[in-house]
Length: 290
Ligand code: SF4
Image (spheres, rainbow, N blue to C red):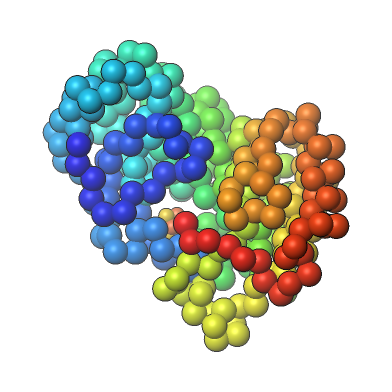
């Protein structure tokens, strides 16, 4: 098995076997992210990936799910992805899930037919960084996405039957745009209706542009109370069923469950945190690097 550089996977995929197919992320400019900063994007040679899959079989008698790293693996050509997925399915017949990172624009660059072929071959899920529905915030953090691209990419995945998980960041609008950020994010989520969502509180990553902007006073972090209010607004105003992965370690009230069923329980937790969380009246939330 070969891995290059620091390897990231969603915390939800902690039990999955990781197969590296790309090195880095094609975008690599989001100001809050340092995941792949030291890597220049390239795809791995197909024969090397297939060899890793074979070697993994000799190491692991049972593999329930596989996550393809690094960043936006969905950018790879459909033929390449198909060969990787087919090899995985042949090699691990017991497997029930294959997932990867994608951007909404990776979905846009593929036809629904291509996505359906990938789905039928065995691709089950794409993890996508939405970050915010507020265009001003998306532009400020140099996400390189607009609403039409997000809505269109999400629609294509749905039409193809590929589940998506949209992750986004409480506090990404800072103190000044906390309300605009969460309102626009909630509105956009209500349109695209991902099958799963994963909100997490902003953690300034050391060495990132956003961290420097915070030091320079160009970005003022949202307070813990604002972050809690963002989550409360989201829970109160989401109108669709989804799996809610709000259990990231940086969140004020780590909680997960099926939404809508869990709506009242989530609101109770949030109210409890408002009254009892030790940091709720501090200026900034104590968070940990990814
Ligand atoms: S947030 Fe995602 S798209 Fe942006 S630089 Fe990081 S890995 Fe790449």
